[in-house]
Length: 320
Image 1: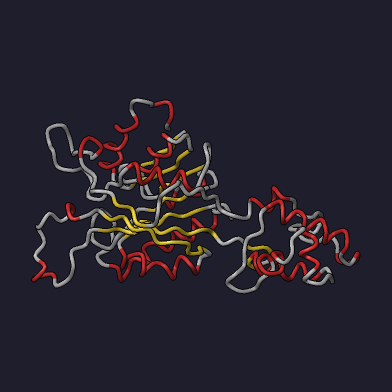
Image 2: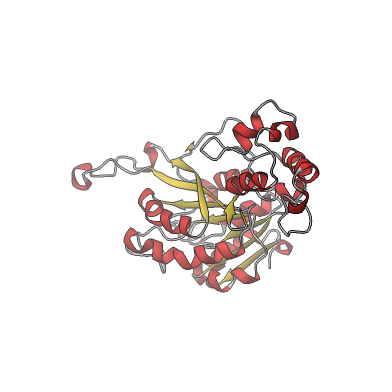
């Protein structure tokens, strides 16, 4: 199912299902479309109401893919962090020399020609009792009255529990769900009786492996892929034109479906919900549909909206 709306996504978020993935391809600060900012200086203010809304609807399993220019992302990063989004990785779409084709006057612009965009991966920071998972795990184990080394016995390891799962520095590892379940079971059997239940979110029952698995975003890295994506600019039949009679490209920033499929497939599973807040030509929604995900998207510009609908007309029962 794909739900496409003509209007402001700020008016839609509360009616959309909870997102597993958000693909943001909004303002770049270059006046590229209606409502865009004139420079990167105001771009964080442009995004902030959207980021606030994303944070309100996101869960610990939500991944955000933030497309932008390098300076647009840099200007927005602090606002994303302020609202609970944790930086994971910056991925570079390298469009190659063909993107400029010798048409740039470097003596005039006085810099190297730009042939790249960034697609930055964020996850929504999971918290329990207003603590990061790293700190909560440590404090919860300390609350049992057990020694730190007894966590190794709980997990059936020599020292990995103390060295990884209870570490309070940069060497911390997220315990696999089955390992977390062992820690919780051991704590509730051997910990101080008056403090039970341990490792509980609601104070009534300990969390189980399934609960813990939901405290982390999904990620499945396809073999051979790195954080630099060498992919020529979009051309050919996939690049939408204004009309059959007008060969001018319909949208200056149309994204390739293969790159959108890459990030959606890497961070979600079939039937998961994909948000595309700034629809444009609804490329992320189309990619989501082709991957058997559910998509929700909105686009302000009625001309883009109507043109984008033609991409779905072969399967009209899959969108509303």
